[in-house]
Image (cartoon, rainbow, N blue to C red; front, side):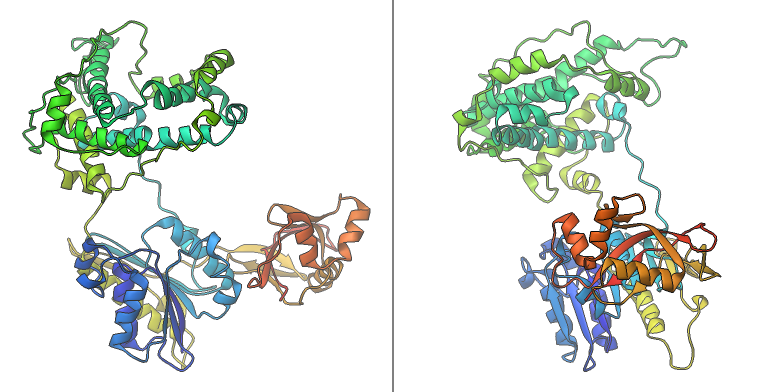
Length: 601
């Protein structure tokens, strides 16, 4: 008779639903399982998400997994949704929904979603079964209301990011060049199009007002380049643009860098500048038939083809990939001569880069105004819109650009190149999922589910539950007791009270007036409210206008809130979360309290 909500129908979700169908979860007269996943089935899923078959490709994961689990056990009562679980779906997964649940199981692939679900479980005091895998590694965490700490109580340290200076001028690994290529893709094919669309969607005055003061000139230069100077009319223009970008990125910029920091440069301490992790680069000369040894790819040709087609997609021009066509166009393109110049500042390390960003001064409104006047007015381009290209590692054309761009940069710095398949794995941070790890992790979670349901003979203590961490490659496995929740000490009704993140002051009095609420609070807890708030809205404060306070005290709690926020409560909302600052009536000391969970329906 359990009512369980499983979020995610991927590798862990499929395995869990299979286990539950065989265990009889949600198979009783009052039992029910709800599964939600907004993703559709792709071919790559079939190797590890075994409730799916070839014929299911393109269908929703949640519906397909629910049908497959029901086929194993026809008594299983299951409902499938195709919605994400987030603040914008609370009309669907709201108070009335969680009120009927016995617990929640997460089969998610990101921390942000887990933290949101964790907040919901803490609020509704529901157990949460959490698990995750990473290749041969797996972990499980059991969250039990009032007994263990919640998932969000401890956080992993943030991942280390690549220093900006390393990315811009001194890469030494293929990961650096791939990240640089990804960033360049984002700037050239997505951000520039979005910026132009923003400009075209409002008046020039409104657009100027929306820009950050120190980036006005730079942004308007980009818009002018995208909309005027470099705007293509034919696919041939896109090919020319791509060829000139090759020259700029992999020849001219490198020559400028070597002009600023010659190969034999010595630092003030007497050591060679180009040493250690700083690899001395070399410019590349365009060669249509050049093939790299490591990845065996025609990176020069691939870059021009991919860049030209992405540029064409952005402007709604039909592209093509015929080699003979490109050879014909490329031999007629005139590439301007380049001479490195003085006065070009290049940061030698991260400190210099940071101070350069901080000290970057905009040339002022006069240049920005001149640039704005040189742009066509939005009214002259009515109906014109660019298509921003969102990078997707599963789209081959996108990966061809990122791989060739990364490889050319790697060749500049004598870094071994990688093929598209390996680049896709690095750029997408893909670690292959292993069915064995998934099976082990879900099995361990199901053990904890049996414990949660409990035995009629005894109440389980924290020692009975186990969190697990395993690595099948070593092999290594450890089971540990969950951590109890952190406690806060307060004095309530003259007695010491230790409360945790699971606690709240629950008030189930219906939709009473604010005056009645404050009176009840005073009688029940012997506390005088000095401030009462809902989200960022203050409902009552001791220093507020006396007339307004008396007006609000006569109003229903929901009416007070709607009069301030101008938002009606959705029909499925049962609770209001209120924050209270209150003082002990006898000692006048401020008492630290959890939130108030006020049920108004």
